[in-house]
Length: 282
Image (cartoon, rainbow, N blue to C red; front, side, top):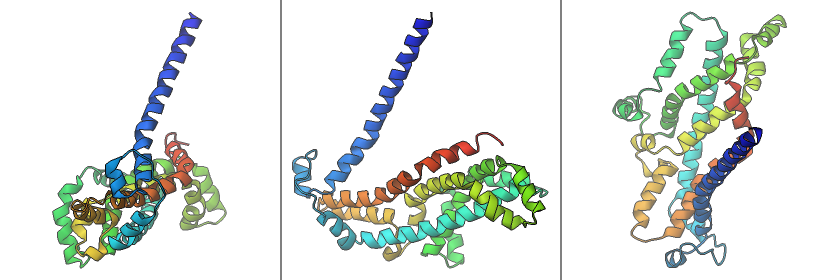
């Protein structure tokens, strides 16, 4: 009987490993192909799309950065996403701390409002959002797009950080109050560092969503010089369809993916730790 259970356990574990390896190949092989194809001339890509590049030529990247204005789009995306990420992280952290630690009347109702913000589809907000930004003179503005990202990201951020802050021990806050720390000092110097893995996790998910956004940027930005990377890629695809410059297009896609991969590679341990923080209340 015991041998049968051991055999079943090994079989299930083997099947799980095989499934994970297959999934890894499905995810990574297209990215590897995209990466090495970005160094190939378009002629070589059309002749043999699976062959390795004869030499790692950077002309595709220089063409994308200069000729198709990808450098400007890239900087615009960094500015918009960086500002939005900072504001979202700060505001949602303060909101989660206040909802979990300050005994404010109606805090549960406020928390419910944040959750309801996740239910409204983004597509339904496009027309009123356009009208609001126009009245506030924030249309066609990078700062205006940053504020839109903040408004869209805060409900999710508060939801996750609420579970993280409520899992932190209340005894720490009480000890800080005994030592004479103000509420702001307790939040900034004690709870914020304790919740750092969870905050990093939320920031990573928000970064991916903001960086890959196309719809909100399309509605908000009109001037081509202010467009973000996703809008620039869409324009570039239309232009390159008539030229078949696949090497330049692949180089642009690599530049789009690379920041997300690099950031996740440096903080992936914190992401896993942050996902586990709010699972059990302390």
